[in-house]
Each structure stands twice: as C-alpha cells, then as structure tokens.
Amino acid sequence: MAHSYRNLIDGEMIATPATLDVVNPANEEVVGTVPSCGEAELDRAVAAARRAFKSWRATPIEERRRVINAMADAIATNQDELYRLLTAEQGKPHHQAKGEIFGASAMMKAQAALELPDVINQDDGTRLSRTRRVPVGVVGGIVPWNFPVMMAAQKVAPALLSGCTIVLKPSPFTPLTTLRIAELWKDIAPAGAVNIITGEDSLGPLITAHPDIDKITFTGSTATGKKIMEGASKDLKRITLELGGNDASIVLPDADVAKVAEQLFWSSFTNAGQICVAAKRIYIHEDIYDELSQAIAAYASTVKVGDGSQQGTGVGPIQNRKQYERVCELIQDAKDNGYKFLLGGNVDPSGTGYYVPITILDNPPEDARIVAEEQFGPVMPLMKFSTTQEAIARANASDYGLAGAVWTSDPEAGVAVAEQLETGTVWVNEFLHFNPLAPFGGHKQSGFGAEYGIEGLKEFTYSQVITVKHEAPVGA
Image 1: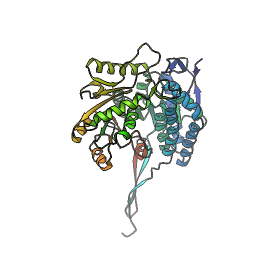
Image 2: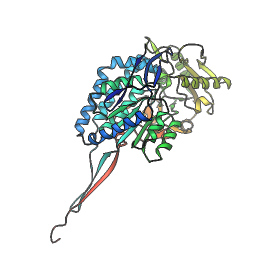
Image 3: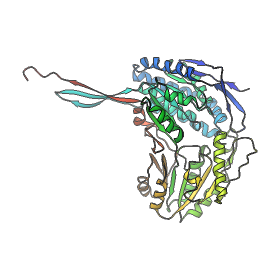
Image 4: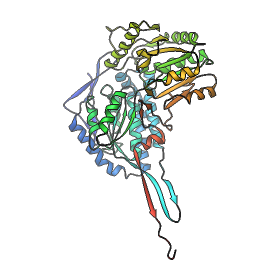
C-alpha cells in the first residue's frame, strides 16, 4: 500500500481531503499519496509565514545559521532512507540520488556560512552612511521534478539565512522526499518559517498571484517562467527565474579523445539528460569528429538503462509520461527527417515504465528540432564544425544562455572560447560542477537573477541606506 504524506504548515503536518497519487516512473506504480492543496491551504501557509516573519527577521543571524545547519544535518542523518525514496519517485539511479541528498545537505551548510555585512558609503565629519541588506518578507518557492531535493534546499537555505520565511511548492511529480524532509524539519525550524505544500500545477499561479507573498523563486521551464513573470508583474513581486537551457559543448581539435569521450557522455546523460545544464548540443571539430563520435557511441553501448533501484543501472527512466512523450516525439521527428543515428532511437511504447534508450544522432542540421529545442532526455546530437569561430557562433545562436562547456588540451585556449559564449556559466574540461559560493544564473531566455553565493543570497533582500548627519561643532 502506498504511504500517505502530509504538508508542513505552521509547524504542523497537515492532511487534506483531496489527494494526489505519485507514480514511480520505472514501473508506473503508485508509491505515495500527498495532499492536493488549493487556495484555503495556501492562505493558511502564507499567513503562518507572515506571522513567523516578524520574529524570524529579528532572530540573530548566528541562530539562523544554527537552525539551517540542524536542518542540513537532519537530511544527512537520514540520507539512506531519503535517497531510496528519491529514486522511487524521480527514477534516477541510486548513486545519483545519493549525490543529490548529500549535495543538498552540504549546500545548505555552505550557504549558512555566508555573510552580508553592512557597507560603509561615507564616514567623515559630516555624516555616516551605510547600506544594509533587509529581508524581502515571505517567499514563494516553486521547485521542479528533476532535482527536487537540491532545488528545494537551495531556495530554503538562503531565504532563511536572509531573514525571510518561505512557502515551498514541490512538483506534483516528485513531492515525497521533500515531504519526508518536512517531517524532519518540523521541530527544527520555528513554526511558520518553512511551510511546504503540495498540489496540482494550478497551485503555482495561486502562489504567484498571492498578495501577501513578496518574492517568487522558480526553477523550471521558460514557458512557465514567462507566465510567472507576467503574474508577478501585477503587484511587482521580486522574482528569480532559473529556466531552460540548450547548452552547447565545444570540443576543440586538440582534445584527448580517449579522455573526454566518457566525460562528454555523462555531461549529456546524467539523470537521463534531465538537467537544465546538461550538454544538449555537442560541437566536435571535424579533425576528431569521426573518432570521438564513435568513442562516445562505444562507451554509451556499455551503459545500462533501467530501474534506478537496480544495481548497475546508469541511466534511469524519464520522470513522467508527459516528458517521455515529448522526447519520443523529438526522436520520431529525427527519424521522419532521415537523420542518421549512431545509437538508439527505437522506443518501445508497449513496455512498462518511461524508458527511452540512449540515443545519439550523427551530425543533424542546425535547424533540426533535436538541435534547436531543449530535449531534456537521453538524446545527444553530435555536430561537426570546421573553425572555432564557427562553433562559437553556432553555440550562441540560441534563445537560451544557461551554461556551456569547452573541451581542450590547452586550458588557456579553452578560456578564450569560454569568454565568448553567451551563457551564465561555462566549464572548461569538466561539467556539472557547482560551487555553492559562486553565483549560478542564466542569460537570454534562460532567466535572470542568481542562486548560490552572495549574489544568490542578495536575491532575498533589498538594500536600505541609512544616513546619519553629524551635528556641526559649536562655532563651526
């Protein structure tokens, strides 16, 4: 029997008459039920957050750090239970789920150590002027299904550290692990400081439009981000949007084929390709294209696709049916247009679970849908280029600008290319590395604002300048 989970509102675990089923994408079986909240539950959560904000903002920052660290410790202490639950609802292999759980705890601790000191603008005989950072208030956090625990943690930690309170909405596809964590946090965070509620996608617009929410932080698709921006404009809510990407990797002709083939594979296929910064377009110099494309395909053929809970699985299922159907549609479009496949491309729609075989395309044209659109699945298009400037131009010819990578035996040359890419993050000779002290954010239609680091923490505050004029000395 599937376990029933409850929401965290005002320090209590709450059930609702209406519920949602959560499906394991590996076998399409229901693994849990969660509350389906509407306007009444949202109002209750926001009211709790508003009450808690009055005292939480006045709480000394060292106490806020202690609470965040205790919340992080609760995740780490229970990581064995949590990673298994995460695999059951999200589909990613156990070793990747472990990484997400551990990473969420570590990231919260790193964020808790950040400082936002006052800045002295003027300090002389005339006046003292300083800028301080003030918490914006109640935050509405909306989390996607690809990294539900990490994305929740990276919104909750800086919100609390800044002095804000938060109402968090997990994806209806992957709420279970977050709600189990809510049970662990119930007696750690003050009542109302953290509220976690679940519901259909229709709950998101209610959060965006709620008059007593001061800021929205959202991770998800560009299409939804545009709707959030429109909704938030009605009362000028502050927003942080981390949206989609069509991230390009450029492999220069001096790259070590044997060394980078496996790395390039995982840059695209980790979490079944369901990563906003996964390599979704790989441009390989013509001098090494044939050798490297064959090496990637050869390595890919050794990777097991299957249930993430089974030993040896490297790539799990697509997380939900809607995304599964979209990926299948892109593969079919490539077939219909006669594009060449180096590997995969044959999906069995009659099977159980949302499995897509590892699929690699051989030099499709730039206007192919599989190149121009973000696939968000285990499909990798490899493309050939002749000159570095050509590759840079093709990489930049996108509405997105989230991340990218350059692969070369000459790091200085790699940096020279990286500096010409129109993205918020560029890696040279690695991929998917995040530093909790470095800002992460997008360019173009990949969003704006930042997460992580001081820049991410500032997103939950506004600047206030206080100026004190000194009395002039008598007789001056």
